Image: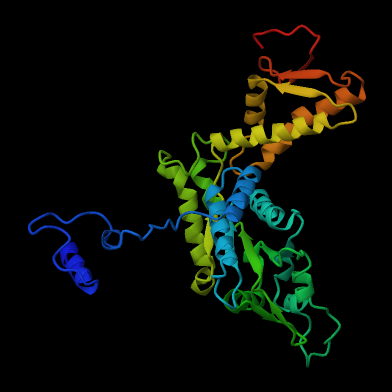
Amino acid sequence: MQSLSTMQQKLNQQNGKTGALNPPGAAATSRPVASSIRPNLAVLDPTEMGAVAKNIEKTLRQAITGYDAAIHEIVKVYQTHLAGLCPAGRPIGTFLFLGPSCSERQQTVEAVADALLGSPNAIVRINCLDFRHSHDITKLIGTPRGYPAHGQTQALLTQEFLNQHHTNSLKLSVLLFDQVESAAAAFWNRLLGILDTGTLRLGDNRQVDFSRALIFMTSTISGAEMNSPFGRKPRLLPAPVDDPDCTAAMRRPSYSRVEATRRRFTPEFLSRLNRIEVFRPFGENALDRIVNAELEIVQELTSTANKPFRIDVTESARQFLLSEGADFRCGALPVKRAIERLLVRPLSNLITTGQVHTWDRVRIAHIGATPSLTFFREEDAWCSSV
């Protein structure tokens, strides 16, 4: 390998200069060669993201808690599409989401659709449980010509069905194949064609173009392997699993699930994916952020109710909701259910029974070892120790 000084001398000669940039015997400089030879050249930053991508990433981070790596990868792929550098004849991006609970995976896809197309329902959803048998493929592409039942079964995944959520400003589809490991081999053959060439040929010989589609696939494969290192009893994790200080046991679900995926899925399929994202169990910090986000939603609901009022949730109440909703195997869904059961329903009872009036301030605390929260109106005696 040539030394830096030798390379600089050759470059100097090419630019009509003589002598080395560094005096004889002097140590080679660590500055970039290009900036030394042409001072007017600006150093570029390839890690910087565009304004559109930054706004989308900010929106997704506000909607999704605990999966920053997946968000960042989705935004990077979309920015490549905006720059016009996506490979021709292939989907914009292909992602495989793995995890113990379907709620976080679907919430991520819904957040992407909402950020790009303006609605969380702007998703073309294919439930792969409906294609567990080889003959079920006719539901997807229709009955091929030459078969006795040709024309009787209409194709589901047509171009019109794929493009149904296109807007005037953005011609893009968000396609979700849910529970993809459940599909039969005939379905997989068509899926590989979609991922490879970005096209699907229907039974009536029409061709569907997927070159303007973001494709997401979900799988719950090997759920037992992911949960086994932690035992059967649900509990809070002491730290997020992507934390550098977390233990090997906390990292094992990600590794075991990816290994199980490699055993289940073919290399031809895995090589066509932009990213395999493991939706790991939430740590305490992530669940804490989810509780805060859900409480903000409840605050917004109470401020716009028929009789608007304000709620103040104390730290004791917040910790109680967190402990009641902590279940690493099911992600954020138990937290939402705990807030609905312990906070939203009691508040609705207070409203309908007339115990809370317009513009009241309701403070909520958890006292002692009681299995429920305690609610106070502003004019009631309020103990500072609560």
